[in-house]
Amino acid sequence: MIKFESVKKIYKGDLMVLDDINLEIQPGEFVSFVGPSGAGKSTLLKLIYAEEMPTEGVVFFDGKPLDSISKRKLPAHRRNIGTVFQDYKLLSQKNAFENVAYALEVSGAPSDEVRENVPQILDIVGLGDKMDKFPYQLSGGERQKVALARALINRPMVIIADEPTGNLDPVSSLEIVKLLLKINELGTTVLLASHDKEVVNKACKRVIRLEKGKIISDDLDCKYKI
Image 1 (tube, rainbow, N blue to C red):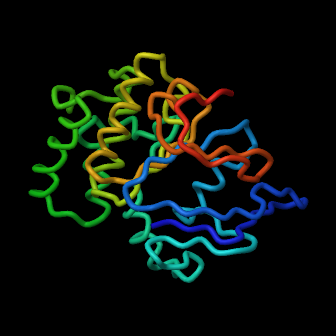
Image 2: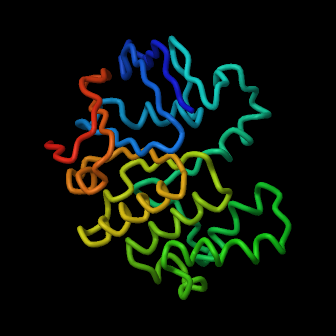
């Protein structure tokens, strides 16, 4: 599904963030990306949803090179990918239902589809009884569940979770990783970037370790150590 061929990413000032990345991710995999701050984890994920483009090399998604996608077709590509971030990125003036619905509405979904699908997704993440709550009325873990529901609402091929437990307590972090595993079991590819060894170990899936922009290990790992 996802393939990196000799990918480099260099920012201004000759800052090498990714260096000769060769990588394949199959449909339905759960892959954790680990490594210290500045290792290149977030940049690698940004290349997949085409927020960034490689300086050298090619990133493929579903068999298509991303550098060939026109700006007009980028939104369609990104609808294949649900994204979850450390800071939730919820709309403060909208309640949980409206935050999730918004992702459907901007893709042109009819109102009856919104009314049917949003409660189903909120039920999946355990927030069916809090659809009318605003972000300030929810705990950090609940906000992240809303963000996860929003990422799922368009039924993407891939979920990208970039430090999704960074602002959460251990109990909430465990709930989020359990949800990611559940989503993966239903067939969705999950890509997780995390500093949290407990989260990575709970997943107990393929772990790719980055240091200074290079992949230094790639294997099944249930005992990741920072």
